[in-house]
Image (cartoon, rainbow, N blue to C red):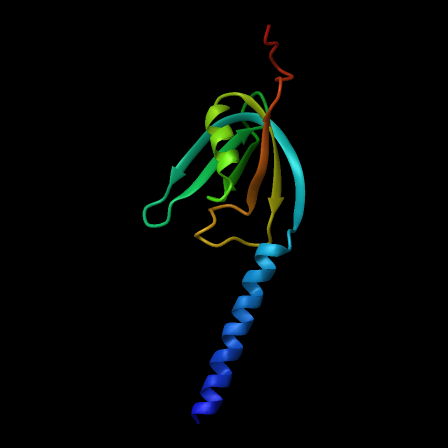
Length: 122
């Protein structure tokens, strides 16, 4: 009886670990988006994650919400610096997310400041 219980628990653990590895290592899509960085914060009650939003239009009707993993410290510092600026971000979309990673399925891997196509900065 104990042997069957260990086999069942071991199988469930292996399935769960395979699922986590699939979610982490297999991206659904990769791409770039640009817009005005309107929000970037470290939020949460028990599990704190870095979350942000980019407005992709003049009226703010199209908002792109994203997360940043804690290990990407250079991206976090750049996003803090570029708050309120027009930015271009490179992201990975995952099939799902875990609470310890962030609230969204979109994870920023790189960010760079761009010139806004709506306003001239002279």
